[in-house]
Length: 453
Image (tube, rainbow, N blue to C red; front, top):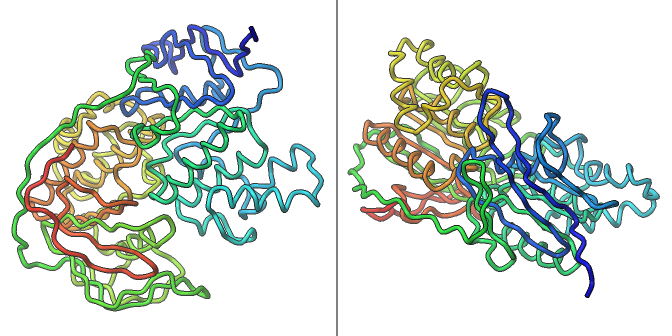
């Protein structure tokens, strides 16, 4: 009988960031063999990304227990925020970087780079700037940058949240092919059922413990009846052609779109269709575009003119966090706009974040940073709230808490526009706007009564 040799093995591994805190990973054991796909689920902030960083060896702090990687085994990691990994300016150079380190002859690189990009469904010029890509496209690019050197183990952190539905289908096909080639895969994922056809073993990480079993979340429901439109238009988009300077049109709009106070409108579209660019344009902070026929709060959008009337959540939450603690992050805006500081504690309680109030926002998980950034722009109750992919990195419980916060704001008159890669059934969305095939379209009313779950 052939003796099994694991590619990687954890034995009673424990890890914590500070000696005065509890273990975020507590006596974890895990074996990974060729062709296996493991999926790890767990609450937001439970340590899933930390575990991936332990596996790949990027954490400088010591851990207890044992981590054994077989000789010659290579690992590739795609983080939740791929921007943190890029080291080159262009797409081709980024994918070729690993080949350069492996001393692959230059005449062989082009075919390997193009093949890796095709494999993840990214058909773009190799000279194109990485910064011109959407976050979902950047996630595909970083997958290609890992696949090009044929890792023995591929680690993926929250792919479903960053990819549109076609990207998820392409990724599943890629993962099946990798398994057939003997590559081991470790997924960290809040929506494990999406990858059910490719996963061999499901794991749950909670309170430091890793346990085996299929994760089936209990749905959390609350009823919400849509209120009638109050008639005050906060955003108006007239027919337009949206393009960056010296580029072809990104999308066009041939009808007038309006967002009213008290509404929650979802802007849905695939990776790279222009959702983030439109949100930044509405906030008056999208560079390299000509003036557009857009009115926000009866004014042409311009950076700095709205004060506390408008809030914007970036797709990368760490770009808008700068205070020393979560509580001070929320208080910053309240001080700026002369509002009661008690509002910070109230919002932290409502969103279940009070236990993080004294933590540095810069040391939190990606999902926790998203929550704190959202809390910091909702705490001053703006008239218009623009949210770029607000549910990325959130578990089921925190997703519901965010919805409850958004519903409360809408009932106080806030107009909310949020982006998503996919439709959001059973949520309090009032209407949809769609970015599809280069067109921005308005769509009909959502259901009157919904459940979140």
